[in-house]
Image 1 (tube, one colour):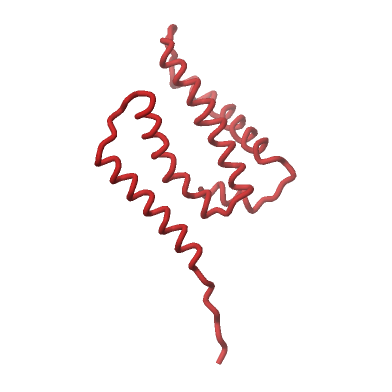
Image 2 (cartoon, rainbow, N blue to C red):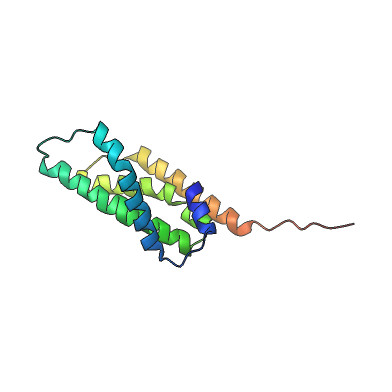
Length: 136
């Protein structure tokens, strides 16, 4: 989040989606050498895990990060920062929808706590009034 805050301070004429793409490409180039030294890829990758990796690259990285960079350019930081609370709920929902992972009372209570936290943050942000200094 610190990098995102620093990025907001530096204005540029580049579209936020292009900025996000450049950041991801630079990270990929930078991490290629260490990854190629450490990881050994199998000669054969099964279809389902291969599709899962492609899905994560497309939606988790490209779409997700580009959306984050775009939101940081267009929305207040307080609103964008709640993505850390919303992402786990989306992941739980997708796990239940596609993989029939269990969703019970414990998960429901956890989501209610998350929603309550988000509501408190949003409500307190609206209610915060700058303190006035009076010179007497």
